Length: 260
Length: 241
Image 1 (tube, each protein chain N blue to C red):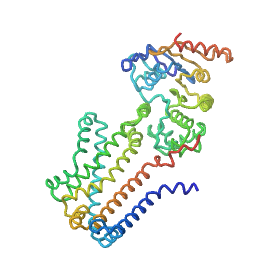
Image 2 (image 1 turned 90 degrees about the horizontal axis):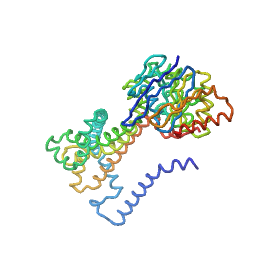
Image 3 (image 1 turned 30 degrees about the vertical axis):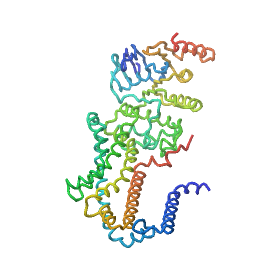
Image 4 (image 1 turned 180 degrees about the horizontal axis):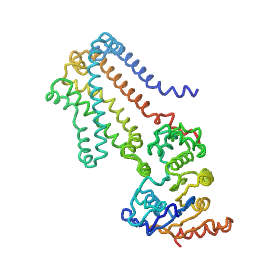
């Protein structure tokens, strides 16, 4: 029984999804809504299968943009958080600006950036970085700040070099918060790429979606939405896996006190 | 010669006069307990001895040499175990050896030799969060011991433990000290603890800390009545009579 009790909660989301899809299917059948307004799940699936090659082509473009933008954001976030942590004046100068950067409406940027930088990949990457760097910088920065000063004192009393202290204490302490930010950013990255493509692109899922929307091919629009969800989930799972591998001490099995 | 000697320390911390002309000695193989009211500056004193903060005036001598403001000579254990969550027990206790430049595998092997004495054998590959408070504290003590075995500064190392575990740790510490013969400077505000483990006791006044009383436990007969009278005398001093 206990075994089932542990597995059951993980299946709940899938049950909800299956239930929702069934309701959707029945609702569409009963109400007889025209397909160009709301297609049923079957039509969406059909659209995915019949346009698989085309969708795969655009998915590759979007995924490339998202991964590239995401990787650059990670690098930027690492550098920025460390600079902010070690240079107090820089922190005071930049921290408010980071907050301001998050108040800029994305849609406006998505319109303006192609105007300034053309329809290539660069403006999309910029948007992704703008969306993704913030949660990572803030989380990593807070993680670096949260290190127990007594541990730093202990290391100082043992005559540890700053680099050793960073490697042994500060980094392992900050990594879990960094991964919290990384997970948020991973969910945003695909969406940010799509928003970037939405208003000015010649390739990619966002571009494909605008095209289909204009021709009232709602089934294909929704097919793209499903792909975006799947890609985002996969990316989050990849982050989870990375965390599992890199932070063994943080795994649930190791966080329970076993012996009194 | 004294193992450790502190001479005429003065310290004002963030505008608060904390240490007032404080002097004390720790002889070889001695367990000296510093008893004082909470917040009297005991931890400040240990921070200065460990070299973490400079005194305003005064000197710290170890084996006759001036060690004021120098870290890395004595080992220092604080109330919290301060084990690294990211490292297994064996890597945590071997840490001081690794920091000294000893290769990781060798450091692990050296540290492993002591696991039994510190009641940790079989737990080397566990993470600190999996262990109980007493075990973590013993691991912290082993780490302290492996850093420098001749002088240990222990700042209320068992204060966070429950009474039963604490009692066990006292007996274990006494046994350990008799075998390893380290010189121990032990800070606490628990009189029972002091009477149990000390060879000498310094009683501190409230802030700014001064030595109010120095008791040589060797000169006190270990009879309930004399210990009781001693306890009352210390209590009176602590309450500032």
